[in-house]
Image (tube, rainbow, N blue to C red; front, side, top):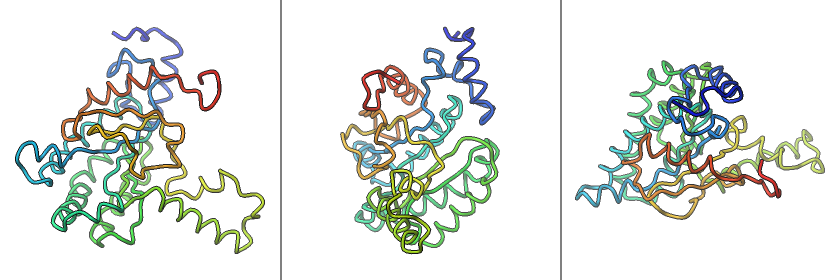
Length: 270
């Protein structure tokens, strides 16, 4: 039983979570963490698929396929914990440099995921989003993701956001271009441009900024992922390769996050 089970403040937080997601029950699924300390938005760099496969004597794509199980497990556990948004770094703009057969397989997997999870996402009350440059993706990939986005558009629940054909520098460049067009058209006074003017022109301005950034595979870098949005995120790096990352590993990362003192540049923790 959670030590917070009788805490009125914890109960109020869980009630708020359940208004968005009736399945949320952090007191059950992570009883040693106060519900207030559960991050609203988790972002994950899913690294280590290739190394996982290589260590087992298989081609890299074998690791990507096995990583799909981790996606399902983590998506479900985020819902259990009351997380409002989960963003997964699925395919970067730099990933086009990989071998053609690997890229083709990854594109096929993106389509297969959309077709395979379309009904489940809606049934579980999960809104599906994709951020990144769609103009560089194969048409069948764009059609698949837009189909799932439309199918879950009216869902009131947590958001699963895939960063596909994504780069943070490119996102900022795209936001700057949109802002420049608005200034040129007279819709925005250049003297009024501030952080909010840029943030509102990012790919998913309605999502809260990530509180927690998890990277699997042990590398200590952010790899051009959500550079603007993770300004104050807590970083947790795990040696575990992505195909082996499951609900318990997610719980461990959230436990570590819950113990951090977040100051946002101030002296006192917030």
